[in-house]
Length: 371
Image (cartoon, rainbow, N blue to C red; front, side, top):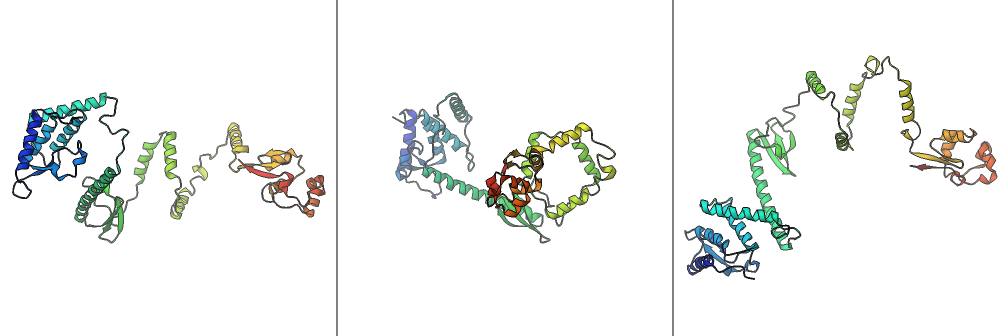
């Protein structure tokens, strides 16, 4: 498959290259030259490292050659050459002047290519389904490391200048957090996004500029603003997730306890001189009884059935057993052997007979199972 079509633009390109090859050109002779790949890297990857594929051109010749390459290529190759020419025009290092006619033609081509890309369903112009080779991945990583180093060096310079103007000394920057030292000797760290000309404030040190406590008027205003607002379940869940695992210090606990002292006593209590309705009392009993009780974590297993509480089990067995001893049989003393003394003292064990002596309560049929 032919990559280049031999038309008048191809002949012009060939003449420029041959002319440059005949002349003995080298950099540093007083004339500005740019190195150019005769056969483009994207179209001929085998000739990338070849010295014979390189030629020195003037800035004008280099510009014209890249413009000509878009004229004698077709298909995906033309797409590559058009984008490379566009990148050449829009470089950060050198802004090249172009005519309005050239700019319009290149811009029109790029717009048409983008429309074609969107209209097509195939992956002709996209990287979808493709993978980078190991060499290209290495090159990408090296390039990103270099750019990151340059960016960090520039940002550190800017941060140092800002801090020195406000009598702060820069110590180091670790994981985007800048460690600063104040003239008073206080050391602290802050995220670098806050050390910008727009966001920066000279009042960074908490020792030199301590926070003033809120006045009662300010607190009342905040309270009035939030009064009547209904928090959704999603926001409640978000707040719960944020505060999960957080433990208050001993100082904060003391402060909270001091603040709450006397708040819920006497007239300050919401239920002062009031009584609960019978319906509300019944609801409270239902919510705090049986499976809804917070202390219930399992059920007691007995030979006459499974029960949530020991009291229920005792009532079911006609109140011949003590509920505290039954709890011990199911939980604490479940694996202990029954002695003769305990056999003689208990009426329930007497009914079972002397065969019970030497066995554990678990073997008789007692136990506790978690939900």
